[in-house]
Image (cartoon, rainbow, N blue to C red; front, side, top):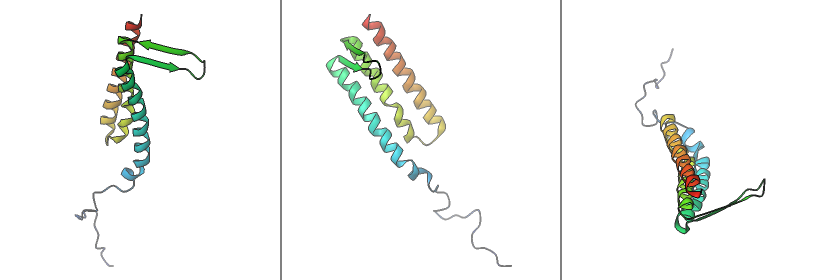
Length: 118
């Protein structure tokens, strides 16, 4: 019987590389980054102008927030916009920490915005 030249403990540089996974997430990561850029841009505009306008497509309702409440809404949108960037992290734990912290701060600033709008 002929022994194989390759072993399970191969020390070549190609042995430890994952094939398929990093490249398979490239397109979703780029699309998530574009979505993130759009949401962060809307939030940045709300912070800079202290004016936030939104329209509900389903019910046709309009939301207009001005002043400090709009700034808080903008910061909340920026935090919410960072959520899709979790795809760039490699481990499940880092993705979970990123998602939880972004959603927590977005909810906090949305709550502050609703308090200031009263």
